Image 1 (cartoon, rainbow, N blue to C red):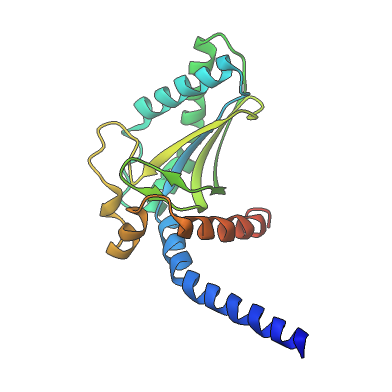
Image 2: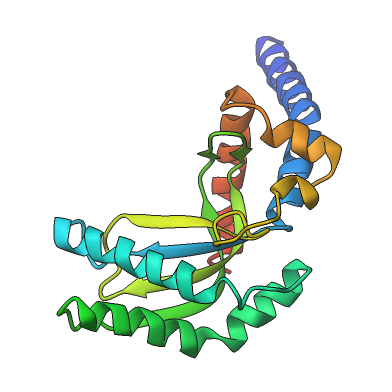
Amino acid sequence: MKLFKVFVTVFMSLTLIIGFTQPLIAKSENISEKVLRLHILANSDSTQDQNLKLKVKNEILNRTSDIFTGKTLQENINIANDNKDKIAFIAKQCIEKEGCGYDVNVSVVKEYFDTRVYDDFTLPAGVYNSLKIEIGEAQGHNWWCIIFPSVCLNACTESISDYLTEEEMELVSNSYTPKFKIIEIYEKFKSKLVCKG
């Protein structure tokens, strides 16, 4: 009888948690399906490699702001795929100019990101579409931003609020709270299944 009471208590607790978090997770996943991120990984965590990563980032942002002109996520994913060689060339030129011989790998992938707090919004953890640029061994700290909507591109005239619903904006407009940690735990677990399989 004691074991039954424990089981019922655990079952009821899980049911309440799932009931509470499911709408939150659904909103979070809708957001991740509307965003294309730029993700640049440095060769290593040395000061030189981290500085090089930032120079590559500046060069990519400066020279691709006129490329990502699609009006939808899919259009911009297609643009990213069609311009992988051009983006790799820009990165490689910058790397060689700095006297390094690192290879560059550019891909368009789905990958997991932790929650990220900006000045005016918080992007929840989740699996996002990403234009991924790997410099050399790609073992160093990374840098990323949002290229659709074009939050981090030069001459940006868009806002993330142009693409999210009012409910989604309500979620991202909050600063980091326990609900983001719940989303992060769920999405991290899910990403191990989605990104590996």
